Image 1 (cartoon, rainbow, N blue to C red):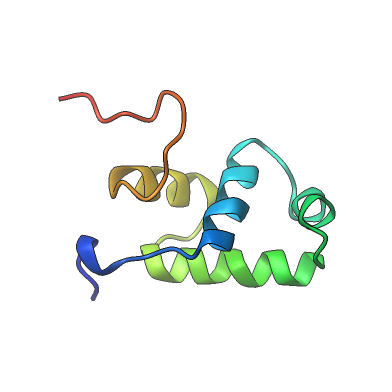
Image 2: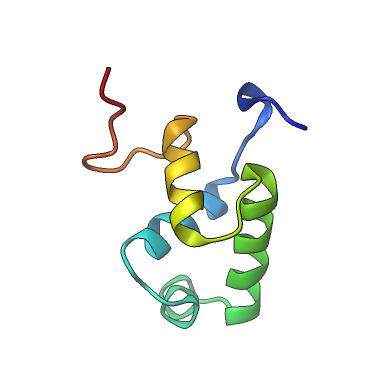
Length: 78
């Protein structure tokens, strides 16, 4: 199992996850990035695997927790 410091998302994976977090469907993300829905789903599957999660909300939470995403209101209160 990967440690937090070993997990890296590609620039495109960050783009896909950021758009998904905004509530866009895979089709909407595909249209915005000029790729197929299948490509978006492939990126999401890679993201889920890297973060050991199974859905979009978990991916957002885990990516934010690991500092892989910068998103308004995502700061970790400490």
